[in-house]
Length: 67
Picture 1 (spheres, helix red, strand yellow):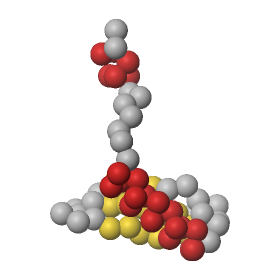
Picture 2: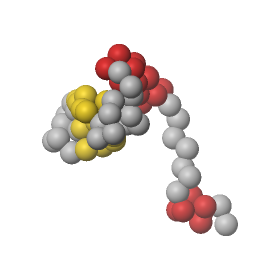
Picture 3: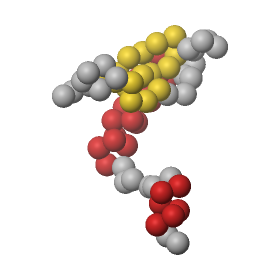
Picture 4: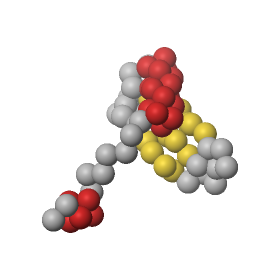
C-alpha cells in the first residue's frame, strides 16, 4: 500500500507537499516552500523522519494516562 507525494502550488505563493496513502487519502500537508528545490528537500527530510523518528505523544489521551 505505497503512497506518494504531490507537489502543489500554495495558495499564498510558493509550493506545498502533500503526502497521500495508497488509497489517495491525505495523510499530511507541508508548510509553504519558496521553491521546488526546497519542497523536494522537504520530501527527503520527511522520508528520513518517517523511517527513523520516534513517536512523541502530546495528545490529551497521553496527559490523562499520566494522572
